Structure formats: C-alpha cells, structure tokens
Image 1 (cartoon, helix red, strand yellow):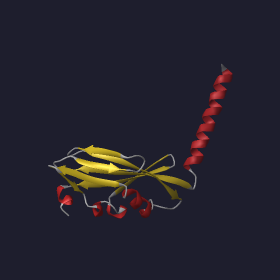
Image 2 (tube, one colour):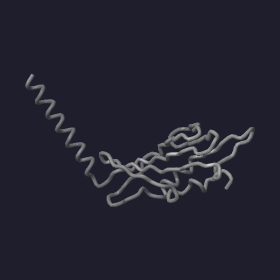
Image 3 (cartoon, one colour):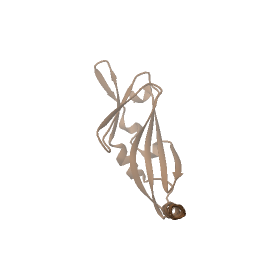
Image 4 (cartoon, one colour):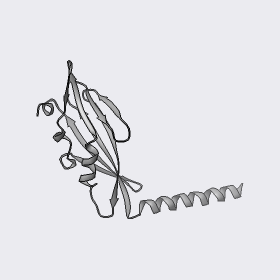
Length: 142
C-alpha cells in the first residue's frame, strides 16, 4: 500500500513539473474565439469553414462563439497576429433570411481583427483571445 502511495506521489510530481514547464515556456499559443451576439429581431446564420463546414443559427439576443483555432504566440507579444486572425475571419459568412431572399452582412463589419473589441485570458500556458461582434439591423444595410 505504501509503495502505491509513493508511486502516485512521484507521478503527481512529474505531472506538476510538466505543467509548470509548459506554462513557463517562451512559446505558447493564443486560442482565438469570435463571439457573436445577435441584436436583430431575426435569426442570423453563421457559416464557417475553419475546421469543418458548419452553419449555426443564432436567435435574437443570443451569443455564439466560433473557435478560430490557435495562433502561435512568441514571448513578448501582447496580441495575436492581426494578419492571422483576419485570415481566419475570411472563412466566416454571416447572413439572415428575409422572405425568400438572403441578406449577407458586409464583410467590412468583421473582416479586420483590429476593428473588434478583444478580451484576453490566460490559463496554463494558453492565452485566450475573444473577439466580440455585435450584429445589428443597421449593419445589414451598410
């Protein structure tokens, strides 16, 4: 019984050291997420082809987060690369259906990472960057 306890203590120490080493490395990643809030009176549709082809329906006054994937982060960088995020945003289409027509949200509303509010978080060597997009009726008429 004592041997098993010592074995578990050693295993726990190895796991702890591995986590500490991963957290303290010079290179880590940003996990990037686009959080969309529907401020319109209609459902909006979000098509994205990042990891798979998928369409999500977002009801009025709901939030939906799209995982944009990971972007490398070198030590000293405060933000993910604007170029990398903008490239990922090109794989997203946002639209709504009105009667028999489809009305697309203009790309300029969400194609530049610099234009979106960002919130950062950090957990165990992974920096999380959440980009926020509030979709309004006025945006569809731009």
